[in-house]
Image (cartoon, rainbow, N blue to C red; front, top):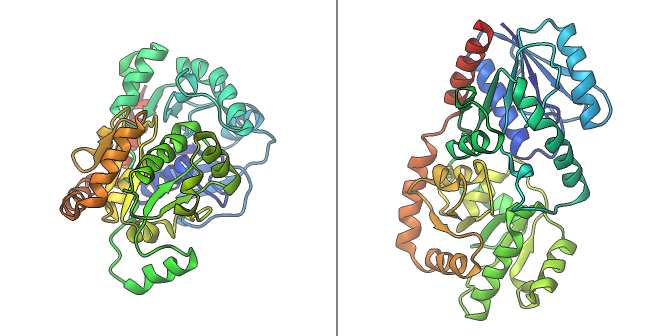
Length: 375
């Protein structure tokens, strides 16, 4: 088969969740299949990690804004490359795709009222998704999503025939592992000026990441004299954090918070290894990739008791209600004060992360492709 894969942001230097999933999926597909893959991406500079095997061809496809690129440039390219199917990997797709369509719908958070806000770019993207997704799910040959939780949300909210929605879990990349080389950890510690021990959190301006709730929980610990480690947060600006601290009356936390900017995915495993505990108490996730990444690095995890996060974490993490700063503070204090608990979660986490592989993800997707092209 000649399989097209839409991965519009694949070549951008600062990759995040869905971009990383696309890279790892393409690598696993190329490694475990003889099919030919044509990858469509917007022109950019970062090709690290992409497969160089003869069965993978990356087509840099210009075409303006996100909707224009997807609705006009992409269908035209699909026709030109005579594809057997097109797999769109990031929630949206052309309404007239020019080939059988497999859509990965990671989540429908943008259709829910519970979480609003975000910056202007996030809001514009959500407007496009609200227009596109209800229409494209009616015509897609198969809808893939990343957790059983999200599958049921899609079926219930969009009234999709359950037979058309398939769960294919994400996985954890091989570079996320326990690092035995102390020099490697120490080098990254010095580069990012990381403390010897710290609480680690991957921030984001997206409201679902719950930065406000996390800082409220830390403030409670601070006020009780229980915040015993510094708090290291990536991917947010000082102005953003200062605004939240002002909002919650949390200026007392200012000296406990250390920002380290964007951390490349190649460096992130070392930072997980250096951390004492990892926080991922989002308000809403369709999967929660950092949960598995941290576990694979041997770092104990506190995550949320809601949406897909318990499905991913299993019995290998502490859970807390992400809407309750008191509960998050209590559970974090348990992690900080109990060496035995951290050791137990480290062991459980390593076992849990080993259950999720990109090879399995690729095999399940190949089955989907074969079923779609047979009909």
